[in-house]
Length: 237
Image (cartoon, rainbow, N blue to C red; front, side, top):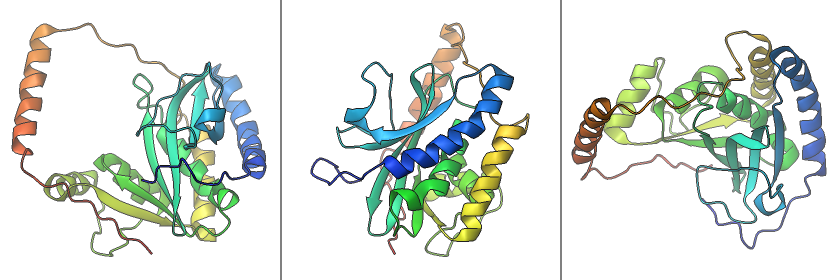
């Protein structure tokens, strides 16, 4: 990932106009679910100083960030990094908002607005540290392994690959077909009762015995992977 300290800023006027149209589509969902989701994009240093923002990586002043806000909290974030004709994304959903399909929502949005951010962009690239992220990108957004070597159809296959080989770099070709598909996915997320949720999960009561078992399993996992070199497929076009 680039450290965006000296990079020239992009004029985000057109991007924000595109997001205004998307946020108008969210109005119906918000009214129905009594929620207040809003999607915004900005450089980190220009964001509302009272907003609570967390992200996958360290945030620098000129980090470009796409956020799904709720109650002035960035419930799900996506760092946008541009390199050599591709937008690379790094996403994170805030604890308590997992399972609300916000990450899926933002992935649809970035595909829809990518050309507005960078007119010459050809791909969305995602390094999937979590196998479910890779699975969802392939299942819903026609993502591919740029090396053409991995063709999975089930989450279990993605999980096994991640366990044996490390992270998988996948790409979405920004052609008209995939952009239209992302719009359809976005509409389905808003209108399907099994998709976007507006809940805030509370942390369960601390269970010392259960915590000890979980910690033992975590320690075993760390020991198992201690000497394994992290391998990430980073293929650039």
